[in-house]
Each structure stands twice: as C-alpha cells, then as structure tokens.
Amino acid sequence: ALMMQDIDESYKAVEAMSGYYKYKKKQWKIILKAGENIAEVTKEVRLRFARPDDLRYEKQNELMQVEAEKMVEIAKHKDVEGSLEEQQWQVRRLRQTCAICHKHLKIHIYPNLYKKKHGE
Image: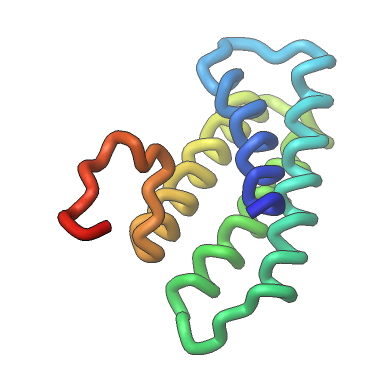
C-alpha cells in the first residue's frame, strides 16, 4: 500500500499542473522527478507483486511504467516544441491506466463514496 501511495503522490503532483498553459523550470523538474519515481516504483511493484495469471493487471502495470518513462523523456526534452501538450497527454494516459486497473481490481479510490453492502 505504501508503494501505491508513493505512486499516487507523484501522480497528483503532475496532475495538479496538467491544466497549465506553460511550465516553468521548477515545474519541469517536478514532472521529471515524478515520472522517474512512478517508473521506478512501478517496476518494483511489477517484480514484487507480479500476477502472471492476471494479464490485465500485468498489462496495466507495464503500461503505467512505460507512460511514466515517456513522461521522463518529455521532461528531459522540455524545450522541444509540443512538449507541454505531450506532457499533458501523458498525465491523461496515466489516469486512464490507473482507472482501468483500479476498476479491474475493484479498488475504490474513495471508498467512503460507496455504500457498503449488508454484512460488510
């Protein structure tokens, strides 16, 4: 759970900036560090908590790592035209990947929004 919290914190850092029309040097540094962290932690999750019998889980974790690595590359080339738009796209890709995996695993990010069934 702590590893996923680490991923979530990095994701939220970049998600909070996803609507900006321009990034400053400091913000690109946050994006770079967040991407590196998400990729690194996801790689560790894939190794330590592999589920070879669950192809969807494996695919979504691989996608999350790939999308985070792309985020790192974009941040490293922040001066290239279109990098802002590409970065914002990567945040959406991470959001999609997380949502698909959470739905698959029946994980509710905000469980207090859902009524518990009788007997739970």
